[in-house]
Image (cartoon, rainbow, N blue to C red; front, top):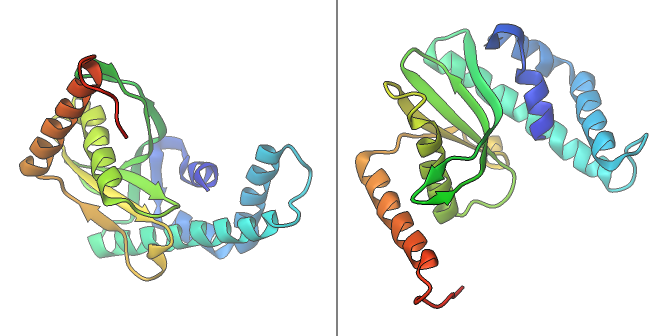
Length: 198
């Protein structure tokens, strides 16, 4: 799924037009070929067989639904394109004396002064993990986009079939709570006097 989305949204100049997404969405067989090629690359095989045919179908449905939701999002915001600022971005910042590692699925913008951190969720949502991830991703790009409003957009793929994309605008309270919590947890990890526990 991730590699297919990266291919679709990788365009010269980084401007993904609504018309492009509509064109890709109409070409169901084209989507299937993209997904199929990614699965075959991953499995080092020449065809998709067995239960992987079911996975292929699920991924195709997810891809199509994300395209639909992005088209809806552009229409609701009155814009004709999404500006892609980065895809599958690797980040390894140091925070609180620890090295973190993360991959941002998509960084984009629908309007000047706003940056969206897009996170595709294929599994079950855990609010605590999502909260931590949103805080970390915001921290990863904060210096790069000092003057921008950072919005987190969680694309919980199965939920997209019943509801639109959820945008989360973290406030100062959210950042403070996570900053304090993370600092406390990392201090405990770093303290040899505190026993390890699950």
